[in-house]
Image 1 (spheres, helix red, strand yellow):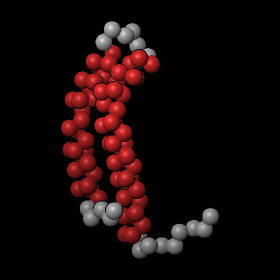
Image 2 (cartoon, rainbow, N blue to C red; image 1 turned 90 degrees about the horizontal axis):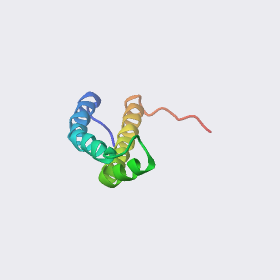
Image 3 (spheres, one colour; image 1 turned 90 degrees about the vertical axis):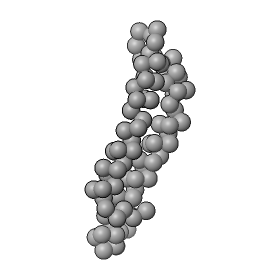
Image 4 (cartoon, rainbow, N blue to C red; image 1 turned 30 degrees about the vertical axis):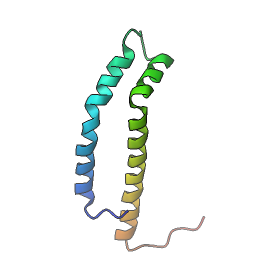
Length: 84
């Protein structure tokens, strides 16, 4: 996807990502209850609470990174990519 305004897109992405902060912080604290450290049990608990959200957001971040590369390539005039 071409990004029309990369700066605006970056700031909008930050604002949208901020909605997950409270959930992630709460889930981290809840998952650590009764545990001495970050154990496999912690990671299981944490993933059960926010795993789907984290996977979705990581996928969206990968898409956004690709969109920035694509936009940069378009803005550079679609130069020939090097052969492999």
